[in-house]
Image 1 (tube, rainbow, N blue to C red):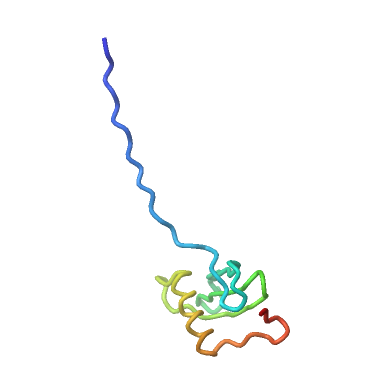
Image 2 (cartoon, rainbow, N blue to C red; image 1 turned 180 degrees about the vertical axis):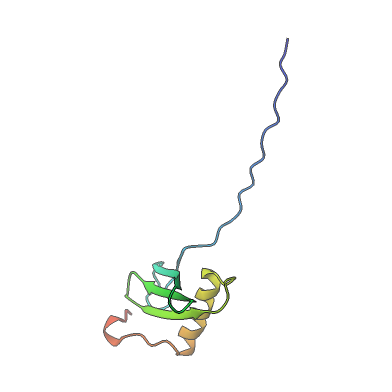
Length: 93
């Protein structure tokens, strides 16, 4: 006698957002974005830093919906517009 076969579970994997981004200054995939809640001022701040060249920038986050990808896009726009200055000694060519 045969047994009844079970139906195989279908697993769908959703793509996730990246956690490490490409640095516009040095080109390395070492840009880390942390969104931190400041408890005293009750606001969110995005801390952007590159582990390779040492580029550091802080930016306020207005909405709780905004995630790392949106912050990275705004950071790239400001960097190429010239609003973010790179320290002279830490620039790589």
